[in-house]
Image (cartoon, rainbow, N blue to C red; front, side, top):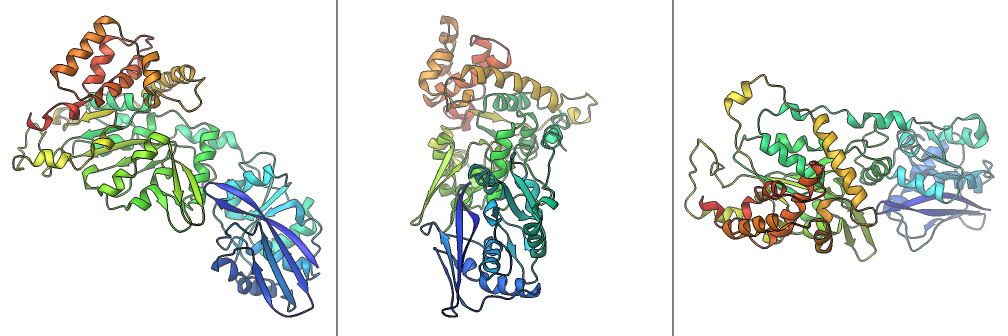
Length: 513
């Protein structure tokens, strides 16, 4: 007797429907699993045998063939235990399998029949809905996540016994319900705020520019100046995640197994801060069966690289293509997988090995030439992709003791959202352009036209400050964002001046100042 159950395989951040065919025949005693299973799938026989015999059912001792189609897709992991077990019970006539075709079923079984959580529940739910299944059966810990998909009945199960009861009387078991609006209401609740930062008004303004235009930024300054503190608060002034962005972000974290058990939807922009010892594979993603790296986990959020020159050259160089394309392709012999990588890069570094080259009070102890050598650890092509160079100096002690109420993240965010709305309208006819930082040369000419006075100012600044040619486009992009924050249709002189002051490292012999 042949019985079909249905599951899903996750490739990248998308799911593919898998048909699991089980045939139990009295001609023989062997047990086969075919269809390109990995070791974890092959080992499911022992887990399934223990789970179903613990409930008083019999494991088929006849010739059994489990086929997982399509056979050219690698089946990875233990999440197929549950659909295989149900297929075995139905094919051997111990349960009625008439309604199995209505459900996509996924879950790992422990030896006593407990259903353990899986990865990728959200993309699996999305695929189940697309393929017309009326229901999805998943472990209890994954149910809230999967229930974010409207139009699909999601059933939470904690034990194989509960699954069998559900199949006997599906109408008697209510599907899981979630209040999406209540979950999204948490978007603006942060434990940190920009009003915690005393002084540093020029740096906070630069962070506002970065948030408003989606610009990559590099903070350079001595230890203790507040670089990390400021970077951690950037997410609090970025526009709130839309529902589609939240679902996309949650899919990536679900596939990577990074979604916490009490979180069904990621509602705040991710902030990823890997250690400088990270490998290039961990940063960009990969592995034998490709998994998302830190740049994909930072999708729709911020990737913060603290102590930038301490990262390996190989790790930094792999960032160049994803920053431009907002995607990363991982190619292996068995498959090629694309992961989203639309992140804001925020980096920080000391100006020299001792850290005090730009400190207003402490002297630098580095030997001549060391500062330039230290800065050269970051390649020119990577610096090309950073719009803002922000010099950070320690705030005066008086400002730390001052009782002045600093501007809150909510206030700053309101201006950022206004500027982003202007950009959404500006680029609504361009599919791949969403903010000023993504403008190409043609769009710069169209949206960053300068009058004679402003153009002369920029030309003189380029000559006098000996700014490199790569700084030109970056200055125009940042000046466009400055104009948007001011609500100005035209890029004015003040906007160009503000953009120029954030190109410190492009000045010739900056390290000799």
